[in-house]
Length: 91
Image (tube, rainbow, N blue to C red; front, side, top):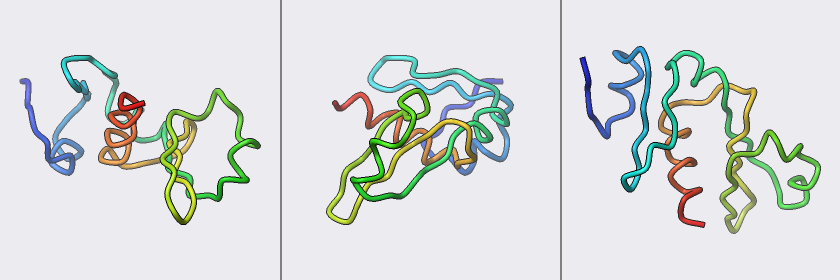
């Protein structure tokens, strides 16, 4: 069964795998449980970014009060993962 939704909470409850299409491009297709256990959101200051291993960083959003960075090897929600992956394309 294929389900299409912009409500990520619904997808987290019922999906076995997640395929994320953004602007006509497939950004990822992964097992949901592995996906949720593989990423995390790090909140830090600009000065901490250079100390992060480059292979762990997916995308960083810079704000007035610091940064939010999607990193591998942590646990994050599906909404955060999709938000950062789609923001990466805006660069």
